[in-house]
Image 1 (cartoon, rainbow over the protein chains, first blue to last red):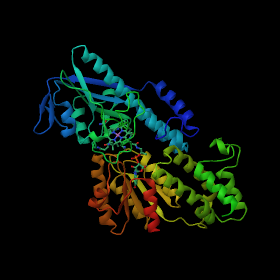
Image 2: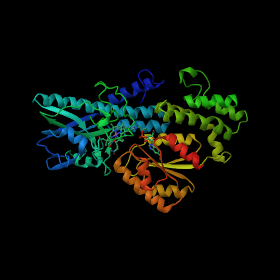
Image 3: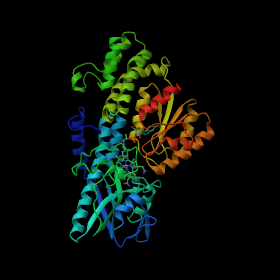
Image 4: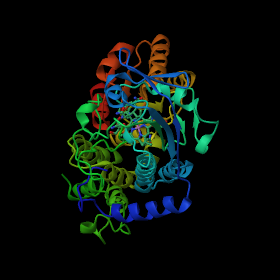
Length: 223
Length: 221
Ligand code: B1M
């Protein structure tokens, strides 16, 4: 929310604690990946293809995934309640609690994505493979409309997520994307200069997350 | 400035809602915006003066601090909540026509987009600047925007979008609004929106944050 440790005004810390407990107790969180192989990477047009679907990932992402042999497509959600409770509290006039539901909802889904990514890393490591960072349509020049291609791999309502015509996932607190897998791919420390969003709220801000200061895009990091 | 108004202004700026509210801790057990607004009215201060000298300047300071990253969204929301407890006493004067708003601002998130936190923050700050807000919500069709402008002649309109895909719907809405209401002032904003995009689609102003929106409206009123 922008505060450095210990600088949050009262009653924020207390509300964060209550909301986090509430959202965790709901058990609505879902995170799944499906691995596809083989993968064809075209370095002239910077595309990644699997099962006949061509993702136009653009140069920044392409440079990270070009050596992938397999690709894990994923979707994660914090479930519908984070957004719904946020809206309800805001409407009832408890603006702060409503906002905290929104922010913690984002944290919950990012955490789910982190854990899913770690599970994937461990599982492919057993086969001698590495993973790349995770990348999402809508980041680093990859058109958000390509979510439609990504969702063509998942059954309707997979993990309880649906996609609108404008490529918006419902529930709102959801993320999607892919992770490259291969013997020669690497997990690169994230750096804001990789991203083209000059207006990002988090640009250049040091991460407070456990992975360390190299992962500073905390909104939904494209890593 | 009158001491009562000064105190009221401080309460709004720091989010002290009422006597019961324990926040901010430094103001615990003191009267808040709710009680002080009542007292100001009872002391014969006009609602217009309360707004102009205490409430609007307080929200303006909040907006400026937010723009400078000195405070963050939670403090802005706490101030907005204190402001709304003052408005419980002021609103009847608006309704009777005794006190006038600075204007009417219609706002909505464009078709296909469900993001509302940013739009709500913008609404709160514009309301805090003395404007009437007509909030059309999220996923607002062009027809709904057009209908609202038709129902509120002279209003200014604001469109918010958070995805590049829905920026396309923003473009369409702006084009149709412009065709129907050539003199309408159109403000646009949202994370992926830029001044360049605003110019390209024929909107009048782009603001990256609520304070910029307030300042733009100030120029118009
Ligand atoms: C009328 O006049 C005005 C004037 C000013 C106006 C205005 C109107 N409306 C707003 N403003 C302005 O004033 C407000 C207060 O300062 C501001 O409003 P905001 O709404 O922008 O600000 C909020 C108060 C706080 N800001 C936010 O809550 C958004 C922050 C960022 C980091 C962000 C977050 C947190 C999240 N996200 Co994501 N996310 C990003 C955002 C990037 C950024 N740094 O802004 C954005 C919005 N996301 C993006 C994307 C792509 C995505 N996200 C996704 C997911 C997520 C999370 C779930 C992890 C999380 C929550 C999302 C949510 N909506 O609740 C996905 C979509 C989710 C969905 N449901 O479909 C996904 C599609 C990624 C994916 N494939 O998974 C990008 C959209 C642009 C695009 N390419 O289309 C994005 C801009 C990031 C980027 N750098 O590209 C200003 O914009």
